[in-house]
Amino acid sequence: FCRLVKGLGNRDIVQIACGDQHAIALSRGGQLFTWGQNTHGQLGVGSQSALIPQPQLVERLQGISLAQIAAGGAHSAAVSLSGAVYSWGKNDFGQLGLRDTKGKE
Image (cartoon, rainbow, N blue to C red; front, side, top):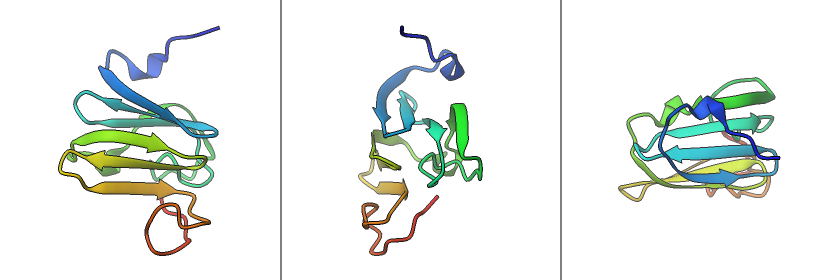
């Protein structure tokens, strides 16, 4: 059955994306919230916790107005209103586009 994600409170969520074991949500104000599996840093919250069961604000992107989000198996990405692309998480095959294969939080 379906349940309300209470951890998002009364935020005006405009987009959501899901990876294999994590989810990310974008608010109308451009804030990003993430939750779920974090073993590869795919939540972008800088925590060493392998699992974060409720939505957390991605503080590293505070002050950057985000326009769109996406999630892969164990990585995430966001595009700002100015067109800048941010990516983090598992990077075994260079899927973050950072010219290496090292995972990033």
